Length: 239
Image (cartoon, rainbow, N blue to C red; front, side):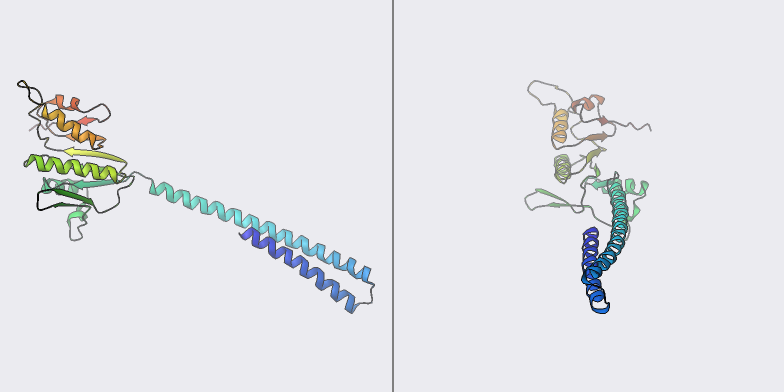
């Protein structure tokens, strides 16, 4: 736009100067119209040269300004696309989540200026409703939720949190499950019985989780119930 404006201004300057010089020369001097026109043409040529110089300067300024702007935009874009983390804590073990946040230096989440990142409600009929209050688009999301008693409620809450995060365009979802419910049902102990630990793994995986971290699984083979696309870690405590 600056280049176009400068070009229009240069054209106007040339035309105005040409007509003014021609009229002034004819009226004030005793020259013939041909001589006046030649003088005006020379004056217009010099004005045109000056206008072209101004136009080149405007182009140079605009070009450098555009480069600087692109540089700022690129820098801002790089800053915005840096990996960011977001922690979503379920209701199964609030003290554990608080201890984890304090260990990571996120004490402000539980101080006077506590900021909720997720809301979990239960309807009158027992249904669980999950709502993430802040944007998590493009972020690494860590869901902290044990499937401890009541196992079915906490398991469903975990599944809904993962599903909500996936639908909210999270970049990567890691489920941190300190207590893995149904872990003792890791094999068929009788005919016509389920392998519940494997079924739970399939449910969690179907919700769109990218990684699972459990603690002290009842049996290490539970890690194999998840597909290779969902790496599973099993840190063990030695007390």
